[in-house]
Image (cartoon, rainbow, N blue to C red; front, side, top):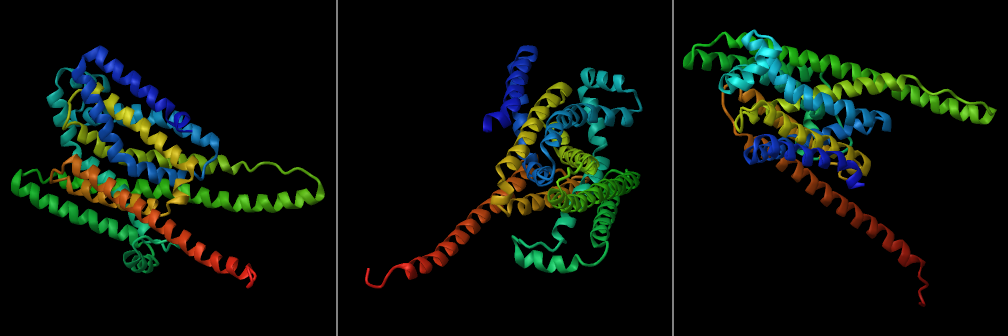
Length: 381
């Protein structure tokens, strides 16, 4: 099971590291390896959240997620995305941007760093909406009840998540404007932060809204199909498959890709702290993205989210922390080590809490069974 799920990731790792060592030497080998570990540590919470969505899809769409999805993740976000940023910032074509990355890596890095406020505002708002929608929803299972119960009550207010996200964006933009004006004089970036943040919010509302709409339609159709199957079984006639499943799965797939793109922002930006080499960066982050995909599928097939019910909570808290970090990094630099550790600590804490919950439930079930067994034993035995 493990080999089947992680087989492609292991193969890509071996080929990627071997190619790096053969083409550029042992320095490239080490940097690609470090970048792979960086991407996995920063995106483990991404895998947990992805698993919660992917488990709603059938085996076909899970394969699409691992094939077409990984091409989008590796080549789109880890290679093309930085080039597009530079092309827009420097007002040059994609070919010239690649040439710039190869011939003038310092300028290439400076252009990507200069675009960081826009990237962080877009990704931060998208991830913040995911966190707010999760934490403001009333759920049967609560991890931090003292926090989640009152927030669930507040969540009954319409559009509260959007209002809170916009307030966070305004506070970030105003703080950035003050900081930029005092320290650098580049107050014009404030408009960029606002526009990018609003774009991230709109993207979430459109993609998330469409996926939610078709998911609800799918559930209704599946319920109707079940009723028709029962009726057809009694009458002895076949029932046609539901065509809507394709639409629902497609929009969930689209939502997953946008989600992965938002998660990859910090990895792409953080990679520049390690190397300016565009191909080393794409190779290392791409290997890490393969493992994130494999971990996602493994969690789905093993039913891990059902067994450890607080994992999804921990991942969403990690998303909230990452959203806050992205917004803060618009004007303050934060180490990628801190970013990765926060996510790992929150998910580890939720896993430990899940294990304790399972043990407590097992002990209570054993206590309930024991008296019944004792009652069945004859008194003279």
